[in-house]
Image (cartoon, rainbow, N blue to C red; front, side, top):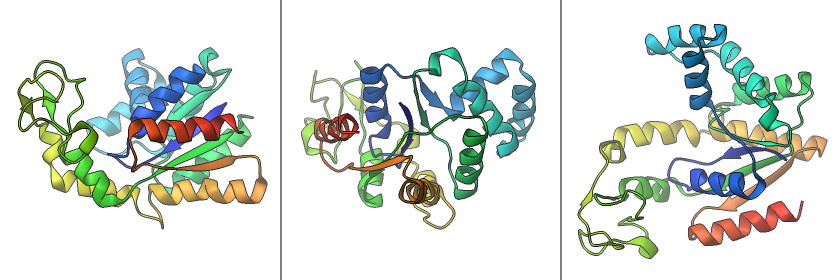
Length: 227
């Protein structure tokens, strides 16, 4: 099963992606990791990407997409893959679709996690890290994992904030790109939705990201198993 995953920062997309990866034994392909791997291995594409990254520029699609295709052709992807973090805009979606078809790689499922922008923002800014264990979930805006005052709900340890979680301007910038339905990430998601309606080969499913992790997972698994 070849899956493309969409969802705004704060939607729990990463958590659900990890669950799908584990359930179906799929490699989780993330664009940032592909850049790092190619750069560390000194590949030709990695060297070209590094030039842009070192200048603080975005890596062009002409470099990014071949990297992604190369990764999807590797042996561990033969039984399926989960692609996350790309495409980020409509133009990239079109180019990725064309490249996949040219390479004979089928896209089977597109998953979109739907969540209100303000709720997504609150979830990011509400995250608190336990000094004893970062895996202890604490969030001041989620009732199920709300901390005990200023202490960890799991162990009672002190809580701290991640600086990037409190960078409201950066969060707003990322969300403005994601929620843009004309040219942004949602526009790229909707491009594949249009393909699903037109061609019928790709299955497009939506998930309500507002409920608990367990409830979202239950909906996701139910929909995947019904395919």
